[in-house]
Image (cartoon, rainbow, N blue to C red; front, side):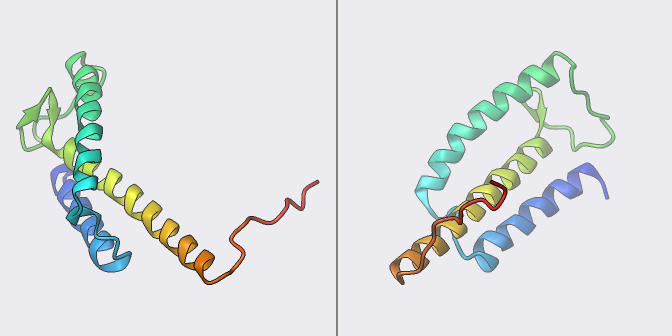
Length: 115
């Protein structure tokens, strides 16, 4: 599978995880897109530096071709998938902890047994 195809598969898989598996529905929330705008600014900045200075190079036959700030669009797709998966996972874990806390269950961690 090519780099470009993997990027598309990653985005689709993470969208399924967000919307159907974890059911956090982050992509439907304005706060996610606001946070993602901040993340993408810095991603483009660093990708631009790394690819613009040829620290990272791409085989032109392995990517679609269009670039934003020197970075192939596939990098933006992978970045989106990574950010969404991380935030959706965090939101799901936080939601479960809050649910347990409301039910009166102890959510504190146990003392270390390695003392």
